[in-house]
Image (tube, rainbow, N blue to C red; front, top):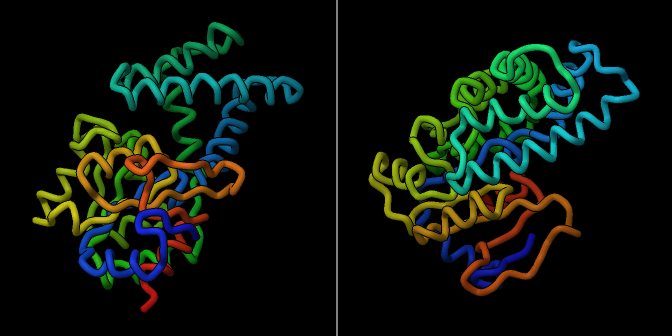
Length: 249
C-alpha cells in the first residue's frame, strides 16, 4: 500500500473521515477480467474450429485489437456498437471466421458471462463496506452483459446500485457517470471515493471532479511516478487491501 496524497497513512485516514459514498470499478477490480476474457476466448475459438496451434496467435491479435478499440471508446472516438462490431470484423478479415460480426460478438459475450468469477473475500468485504458506506459499481462495459455478470457473481445484491457507460451515454473518464451517482445520492465530490484498476478511466475521471481515488496495480513493476496533479490518493495491490484499509479504525 502506497500513500501519495497525502503521503502518509495518518493524514489519508483523516482525509477519509468525511467519505459517504464509494464508486467501485468492476472489471479488474472486483472480478479478474483478464482470466475471464482468456477462458471465454478459448471457448469461442474452439467452437469456431480454430486449430489449437493457432489459438494463441489469434487470441493475441484479438487482445491487441480489442484494447485499441476500447481506448478509442474511452476517448469518445468510437461508439460501443462500433467497438463490438470492429473487433470481430478484424478476426473475420484476418482469420476467415464464418459469421456476422454482431453474432460472433454475442457468442463471445455469452462465454465471457459464463467465465466471470469473483472471490469469497471480495464478496465479504463488499458486504462490510456497504454497512458503512453507499456502494455503487461504475463500469464502461456493455449493459446487459454487466447486469448478468453482476448477478451471477453475487455482487449485485451487495451494492446500492450500478451505472454503465452504455446507459449513461458517456464512458469513464467523462464526468457523466460520476456526477449521476453524486446527484442521486446528494453527496458532494469530497465525500466520495473512487477505486479502480485503470488510471485513465477511473483516476482521471475522479480527479476531474475532485473525488478522492485509489488505483489498483497488481504488478509492482507497473507502478510509476505521478505528477502532483495526476496522482491518486493511494495505490494498492487489490480491492481487498483497499477495503481493509477503509474498514480499519
